[in-house]
Structure formats: C-alpha cells, structure tokens
Image (tube, rainbow, N blue to C red):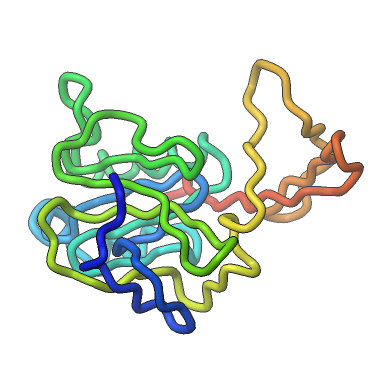
Length: 196
C-alpha cells in the first residue's frame, strides 16, 4: 500500500505522511474492540499480559513487538488461550502478525500495511485498520527512531539455516549473539511470555 497525503504523522518531532501503528520486529496486531469484546478480562487484562514495553495503540489497533519469532508465537498462543483467534482457513481473524522486513504473515482483510519515510533516511513499517480516519502514528512510549529496530534491524537467527549471528550467552532477559559479518555483539530482548 502506498501512503497518501491525507495521512498526517503525529509522532512528536516528525511531519511526514504515515499510518497509525508502528511495526518493528515481529508484531501481533489486534483490533482494540475485539480485545474489549472477547479477551478474557478485557483491555486491562490484555495490557497486564503484554510481556514487554512495546505496546502501542491508536484506539483501533493494538500492537506488541518481539525481537524473536518464537516469542511472538508464544504471545499469540497466550492471546488464543484468552479467547482470540489467530487464523481460520489461512486468514487472519482477531490477530494478524506483521514482520518488519516482509509485511503480514497471512492474508488479513482488515489491515493495510506499508513502509513510510518519516524523514529523509528514516523509514518504518506501519499498519492501519482499513477505512480508518485516524491520522496519527502511534509508537511505544519513549520510542525514538535513533534507538529503534527500524534504524538497525537484524533478522533473528532461526533454528535451522544459515545466519550471520552466533549465539554467545544468555544474560538475564537478553540473548547475546556475535554478528559474524561485523564482529559486534548483538543483543536480543527475550520477554517472559510462557509464564502467563
């Protein structure tokens, strides 16, 4: 989808065309009304179940971001146990999953996704509810492009296959990898999703 001039970005410090909800890493996207109507415990329980500080919402969509796909899968499993449906016949239902570098993981008839240039050289992926009239972009509290995954995104290692990342150690809630292409350590936040 292409951004159109009627979308005005309202993230502080930016004045470019955009969409409402930021996507970084691997992000489950849920309609807020569905959370109120069908999530066991409603919005309060949902917000309490979010295992990290990446929740953002435009009051139509809620988004949570994960650096590792398996953490996203665990959170989607939690959402399903709380009453939401991810997929039916290969289509996203109550939950859609967007990946920062490739878009939606399954067809979704209620979302639009695209890349937006906030400022020259500052591009992010975002989603919006189809037909929305909201003209703001919503990011997690204290989000800045300079410290974001959008600025420096490394694809997380997978269980099988080639990767330029070598696992070094677990340090609290961080997995530490060596980026073999740069020789630098890469830190991956790992929330505690499974305990809920």
